[in-house]
Length: 317
Length: 317
Image (cartoon, rainbow over all chains, first blue to last red; front, top):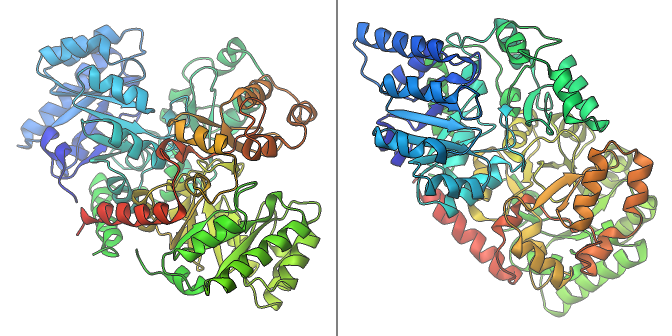
């Protein structure tokens, strides 16, 4: 695969990053991705600060015991009520690369940069990409409308967002949203990205901690299986299961934020992704689900990605 | 640019198709695109049958007088009340290549194929692509969520739609939606497309018949300037101007189809695109608007597209 500034920034072989995903990307997934030459992220989104610390320590222990020397990072959603404690754990554990999302990177940028950390923020518009660059970020993830889970309000797709962010920014851009195979990764490099972040494809691996039932639902999902909904609360892309369709119908009826919040309740993501409650859970997944047709190991995912990439670029060379 | 089955099917130099666009793609735009080695379409969407005939005849007269021997086509939206009369004109005028959209291609496929025509249908999902193939279409346009104007209900983006349609179909796939530059065209070829259809970028040329005010609005538009709205009627992507925002607010309040239809009224597209009514008109444009920063000639658009394409693929070779 192409060598870019992202290879250098993260000290990785392939400029492929595994997305932080709630109930999915613990130390097992992150370590497997890093071990295989890409960049793994422990996703703090569904972890209390103490649990995040345990995952970081377990990953380090596994690497030490197996004599593995590879970088990894942590993803912290900035909208969390206990974000200061999460950041404290990340600093105390001397994490070198942090991805932040859902909020302004400015609040913690100085503190994190002062610790020598590399900082990457997830954005969904040119405006926020430039703000992240101004705040001192080392790179941005430009995430399109097709991404699973929480999403931007402007609904800009990866095909349109990536070239515009790449044109506007000096810092390197990592493309995200809808990417599950090597063809799409190559397409994103063509658009100006210097790395790709992949979510759903890595969620459907043996090393992911999401429920086997969730993984099977992604495998079964076709091109039109997901919807972006709950836009009045915080837009989220999920499977059109009973909960997804109910939420969307309520929103389309003109329901208030309070009514939507009441329907959503608590722990829907855990119910859906971790516990595999097919009807009542929130089964977050990207539009790329239609391209994910099997559950395999992280090693196989990366192997196939590289093969697909090579095949895809052949037509130009 | 790559040589594909689309070059052969249409007998064109570059596998680039100009989209049929209401109030925009008359004989002047279509002839300029075809004259410059790509494939021009007269868009019947905003033409009565007699006017369509006049545009076809004017284009042919211009080609004859200037000794130009290039192919061109006609785009017919199948939902039109007078679709039979439009089809009659197309047959009587011996059009060789027809693009259909917004409806089932099956209804007219036999009749058109019996006339020896090549038939291409615009789809927004794998299911409809397969139906088009079964109906006898020679190719499909796979058009993503980012496209301007009328759009599919499943909101699948070009990045996710194109590879899935290409995997599912035997017939060649033309990518559409959000494509304004050569990088994006190359990205779509990587995804499995054998041609690209470009709308908004060709709408903002000297040869387009849309209002200069409309063209200027596209030039000013940023990445987040458009919205897909009126989904309960027929989803349409347009500028977030006064009308666009009003329509979207009404829809989000839970308004009925009748209320939306009343707000929409009649001739909004003409008011916006042709007459340049900035506040009350429907200014249809794609998310690619953020990448369209100047008004130029069709010749310059195609020249720049090829240059951007060459630059983009260099990184692989």
